[in-house]
Image (cartoon, rainbow, N blue to C red):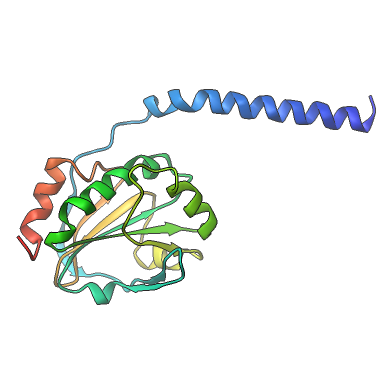
Amino acid sequence: MSFVHAEIGMKRGLFGLLLACIAAFPGAAADLPPLTHGLTPVAEPKPAPALRLADLDGKPHDLADLRGKLVVVNFWATWCPPCRREMPSLEHLNQRLQARGLKALAVDVGEDADTVFSFTGQLEPAPTFPLLLDRDSQTMQRWKVKGLPTTFVIDPQGRVIYRAVGGREFDHDAVVGQLLPYLPGR
């Protein structure tokens, strides 16, 4: 077999593998555990670590500027299945409560703007909250994130009051009920 034939055969094999993965993907979502409906209270709320990152357009965002608001900080990545699944519910939560003082921030870990932009362009509804880039994972380390997705809720005084590891259905009434008492505009 010539080199050219071997290369064509390898490409056909990779193409077949790709098709198999695509065909398997819809069923794979059914095999994932459901998104949960609660946030874990932090026993002793402490000041949130610093968070200063740029969004997809290069605009800087600083958590310190959001003092007085209830802030949901979600660490995620496009390659993470529960992260992908929970993103629309985070947008629904944002739409539902932003007028009452909630601010959502999604911190993508280790990816570039093109990758994040490509993924979020497929979402319905598309996120309207800032998508921040933690390209070198330094912010993730400062926040002691061990797995994705991980979400923190910061009260209007700047303290971490809730933490959630794993996928959440943020717009579920149980989660909204946990957040409502902390909204400054309630």
